[in-house]
Amino acid sequence: MTRNEEYVRFTVSREEWAEFELPDGTILRAKFVLTTVLREKAAIGEYSIKSNNVVGLIVPEKYLGEPVVAKSYTTEEVAAAVEEDWVDGIKTKTPDQWNVYALDDGAIVSVKLELLGAGRTSLYDPKGERVYTYNLQPIVKIKIPPELRKRLAEKKAPLVLLV
Image 1 (cartoon, helix red, strand yellow):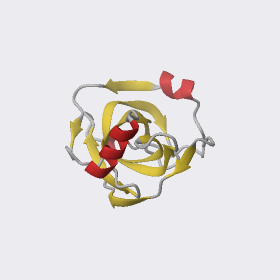
Image 2 (cartoon, one colour):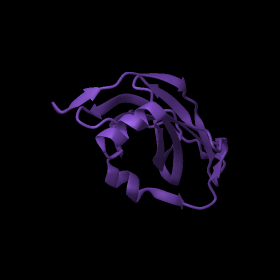
Image 3 (tube, one colour):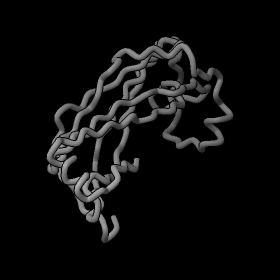
């Protein structure tokens, strides 16, 4: 945070799991979790957000193997071990599922996760499940209420969202 920003408190209106089915039958579950909202002090409506994604997999039995002693794989090791890589054929099981956050200034932030690609590697984790790669992208919308929009127009401040 810079001195020109201030924290904006928020409440969670809805925070759901997104589910995607990969072509090999694996279910990837992901949840976007908003952690922090910052607003520029000089410009109403200029926000930046911080977040985390929580991801879990339900792996078909045929892709289970011997557990590996707790090991952290490097990015290079994972990339070299990809045996199936998907951009097409991924099914969204929860379409149009938006997480919704009500900001204290009256704005509403809505976010949904899109799975842009995924891959199965030949590596296993400590539970004997395959290690998967994935590329999740948050899609963010902000609804500014009329009274806040009026204040924006009076200040002629641009509406900017930094993710």
